[in-house]
Length: 575
Ligand code: FES
Ligand code: MG
Image (tube, rainbow, N blue to C red; front, side, top):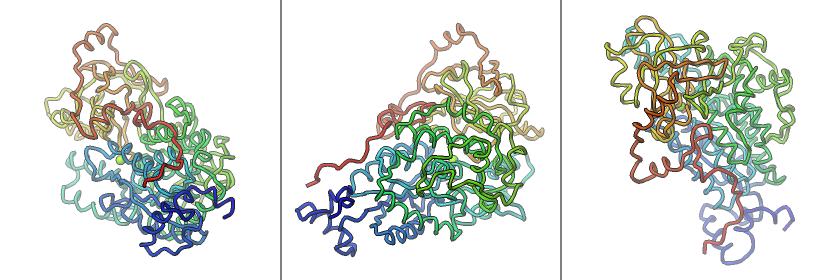
């Protein structure tokens, strides 16, 4: 046995001739594997979130086949295994409630098994952070492969975007401008191929973060799911992971602070989802990198959004790929001096080597640096007595005139209260009001649902009002838009001042000044606090653990006991 083979982790299971080695090998051989599959070659786990209940990931078993070809070709042994899959479109009350649970599944599946390296097959929103969080804590050589976006949605001659057009069309129906029949007939056209949402929603944002962090292969963000080049990428990643194992390049060598800084700037340039704020903070803290809201605000400043994709802009992911994809965007950031170009990526090259001088084939889709979609595209972090630990807003999705605004609060105690009240013709609300939603944060919902982009009241939509200031401790779908302040921390259910807002209170939003203030005196807030009653926590089950241990939004909503790296060692014998 060579030195290289001796140091592989899987050898602790498959090496030698003892009783345990017999057991580990013999049972595996029932799958038709020859003796030399266990000769000390790199064993590569393919961690798969395939599920028919996660439509965006339903094609991932096909992607796994391409990975296997590459792994075999490079002399490794690929072994595919399932982990909990999180489907955004079906799971209630919100897939986010299960992100940390899935990350535990991933970490423990990796560390308890005879694996030397891992490929993560991800796609739908939460699957990407869940797998990266678990893999970061396990710290083996790792490559993430996104499933790729669906082809552009098509409806009656128009391109329509996942999610974005659901919100748009639902508003049209509410305002009486679209029939319910037409609404339903758009369903099939929106989702007409395998893949994830093809807007710059959370899935596309996280696929872009994978590429920007260097933990995915070049072009990971944008190749459509059904484009043969997605298969090529998976094949090459299969070869590459074997090489990373041989060279012992672990995920911690890729996910550095500088890599996260690159990802934050890329998020600004693509007009990425606010959900990335939570996810990147959570992933970073798993690997041992300190990342906070201050980094998001600092690094986002001066980054223009140059990618003209829905929900902020006009185009879709297919257009983005044909225009050059993420390397074109990163090349623009590099030229502006906003990229750490020397960061190592999983293909063995630096990010600079991967992206330098990437061509731009369509300047309508990827605009020029000095002709952006939004000048200040970075996520803005707001603070003030309404959000002492911070809140976020996505300027590229907001209305410029509302970014500096003072208005009277219209308060909803929870989402059911909102549903019951919003279309009441008697509700005292106008276009200048500030809609406030409580108890939708990590502990309050629980799970921090994507309900922050509260639809406007029908009576105002009918008057032609298209945007209003909205504030909550919730998240919003990456496919949504509007002047929406999210992730208020501490949340209402944790006793944050958000819990104390009353109808008619004056709220001031000042995005340029990064402020969010409730114009109520400290004395009055103190009086209100004495009357505030916390929500009843869930009595048992996973939800009770969740509410007890989840961190606030500014810390990424991880469980307190999961933060940090535990590194996959060699566990004790099982028999
Ligand atoms: Fe799965 Fe959007 S619902 S990616
Ligand atoms: Mg979502």
